[in-house]
Length: 191
Image (tube, rainbow, N blue to C red; front, side, top):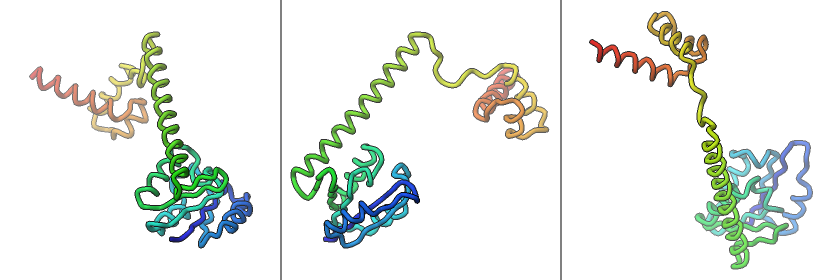
């Protein structure tokens, strides 16, 4: 069992002294230092720490916000630790997953994160339903027929690449290909 510390600040001009002092007081064997936003999905020192951790190790942070910037990300990290038999201790929040009460607190965070996600999904669905009732058109705006006709005409001339056509007309590749295929099928049926 190794106690591993992780200290992070968001910018290079911030310092890690407060976190380092708290971790050293706790008796950490090794500390990983990072000066990078917690919103980044790939943090070199964090990734290195994760790679080197083994079952039974304990990760100690000064506070949970140093580990992640969102509750969902924190829960994902906690679940990954749990699957690998790695424990988590957060000094500020007094969460220690080596104890039943610490696991309970972390589990409550997971439940709250799931609740938050479900509330957001529900609000989004309600907003979309209201917008549809008001006649708001969803999705991309319709493509102007004149622009599409020009795009097909340029394609049929054989003098332009698809990239050139999309730049000239503003018609994107997928609708252009659909229209070209539709025109070809129409010709085949007419023959």
